[in-house]
Length: 212
Picture 1 (cartoon, helix red, strand yellow):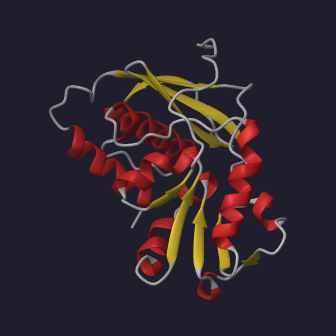
Picture 2 (cartoon, helix red, strand yellow):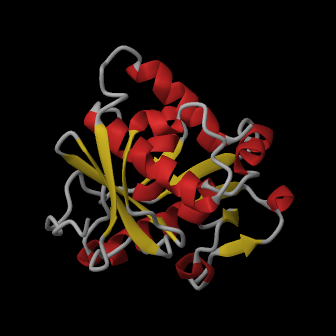
Picture 3 (cartoon, helix red, strand yellow):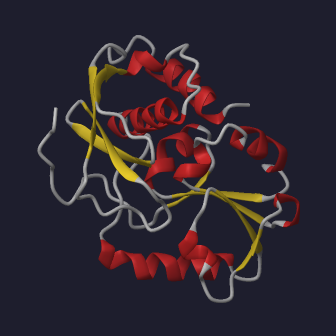
């Protein structure tokens, strides 16, 4: 299963006949955004219906598009998959399916890391996507083999990886799977997966001026 493509299909079913499919979505990049500590990359912002949401990626896109651009699209490249996740994030926020649309302030990073580390301590952890802050965390056992893990963590990089859906399908009933950060909020909500972002926000600290 392709978790991004499947989430697009489910979103299409949710918003069918809402009239929102053809409403414009702006994709832009906020170079000043302070991103989640579990994510790496540039902060791509999707704006729709007066709301905004972020997705952190190495392949950001600046464009005017529509939610319907995803429907039936192959979603093969990292850039397009990232854009689809950004649109899912803002759409699920707009329809009040998800409360997390932006990263928490830097002041919350220490508390978030401490609470997550406490949750993970005593368990072997496998990361889908590189999460250096957890690899350096004291007392945390990180494995490079998903077979050996008790808990699987998925971040922004991991959620767009082609094999993540198969991994979730294979281990979802036998291991705890946790999606991390604001970038994974929309897909994890649609997929009804556990999501960790206790200090994430519905709105950014400030509204950046559009570059388009």
